Image 1 (cartoon, rainbow, N blue to C red):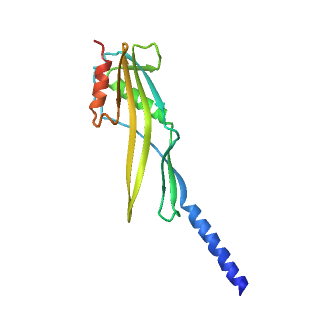
Image 2 (cartoon, one colour):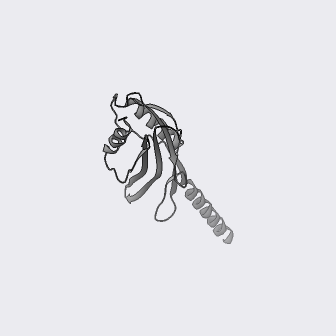
Image 3 (cartoon, one colour):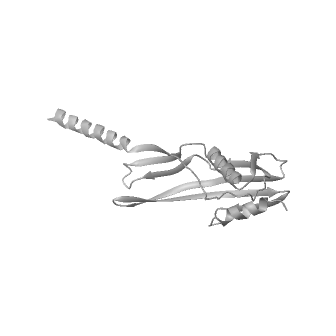
Length: 171
């Protein structure tokens, strides 16, 4: 009888281990930032050096676990966010008529994008989970030694990009 009880206990512990470890996963998400930009000649072919900095302490976007701590997962970005943001920024500047270049401290015009934070928050509302994603980004534009900085917290609308573009234009 003790042998049967011991086998049942071992099977139960083994099953619990399998179930709990199966629900613990790492997920990779592809982040594709975008902003609607129409083709324009506002940049007049002016060169702009572009630099992207990822200031986040790590690559984790989110960690979640249920109330019983049986199911949990971690979400990280699939690609290098610096390269993704650099590519998208250069594409946007090109559509606006600028000529994006590699970052150079001696450039008359430069745009520095700093990724400050990307986090998500999960709230269970059975049978679904509500997800909120928050991203904080800082953009610094230098035009002939004039400096303008704006953060995503300051600019809640797309008008921030228009401000930066207008700062880049030559006088």
